[in-house]
Length: 480
Ligand SMILES: NCC(=O)N[C@@H](Cc1c[nH]cn1)C(=O)O
Ligand SMILES: [Zn+2]
Ligand SMILES: [Zn+2]
Image (tube, rainbow, N blue to C red):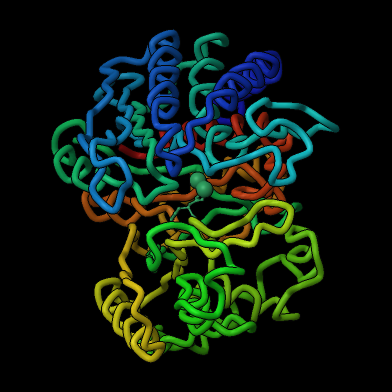
């Protein structure tokens, strides 16, 4: 029987199971597994337990919650435990190929008062869109793999491959501990893996599905400035002491200009030169500045043409200022001089930037800028976490299977894209397991990952399950 014939009853079952799939995602979203908020760490553990329960119900075997020990510094609570890596298998047939799927069960922070229209941790379906933190990044896709298993069990369609699952709870905070686990398990738990598939990014726009073969890396830094023993009255101390916030703003203001140009000497010199051949790549991609503005919710694009936008998202580095811990940020007009402030920023890295060299350039430049202030305040700049950029060859049977699956479900050939975001562990899977890694996204470019009102269209969720399942069938049908 052809793959397409085999998939017919499976697709029917996926449609029938839609309410169950939404219910599963609803429970997942209700657990605020925010890895970056130390006070919510127990909820990240709770999410791992939820996955274990679901996997057990679905008949997965060899389910393990791997303890990663204590989170390394910088961290506020020195005894803070890292959440476990959830490992599981489905199927064990030596005549079938083995596919490893990776996803993450932690999420970005979300507060209703940030501007959400609904409670971020209550999945709400409005006009065919499922709103909630993690709906698209990355609980929807992780549930997608579980849903694919359920649909096979209910329909009686034979599962086409041996599935190895690896779900982590620290992706949004640098994937701490996962690299070492993969190195240790490459020839053990992950032995025999033929291909890796990650569903943790998005289509470029809203109309055309994509397959992704490149990611930027991310080096995340903090600058701590400390002065007075406590927060002070600005009427009593303003103008007569060195204020930590003034020092910090001065240094942070020298990192990047308002057109996005990184001001740290030596950074641009590390970037791989643009080649003539690259032009064709951008030309073929379906995308325009309107899609960018509508996904951003404003007409604030720096570049107006497709090629410049894509180049600056995919193949040039960027530096973003994220926030200041310890600074006054509420409503009203508090007249305080904060005693201790910590500025956060990150640099998205690209080929051929060297992460360690970048750290040195960043530290040196910031130390020089602070020294120029001649401030008596104490000052420290440090790396919080880093993750490599990744680029691969998208012309192999892993990508071909995903191309066929996308065409079958969406009726269109996917564009081949790179991504401006980061999934720190991608390169490690490729290098340690010596396999092709494919990024097969479920959500759209306007899903608002990391933003307020994050959503996943219900149709993307359901068709996403069909796409993931079809990919496994097409890949499984190839020569072992
Ligand atoms: N869906 C991928 C994603 O959102 N990745 C994060 C990873 C990250 C890196 N540093 C902090 N988080 C991203 O921001 O790209
Ligand atoms: Zn994310
Ligand atoms: Zn993600």
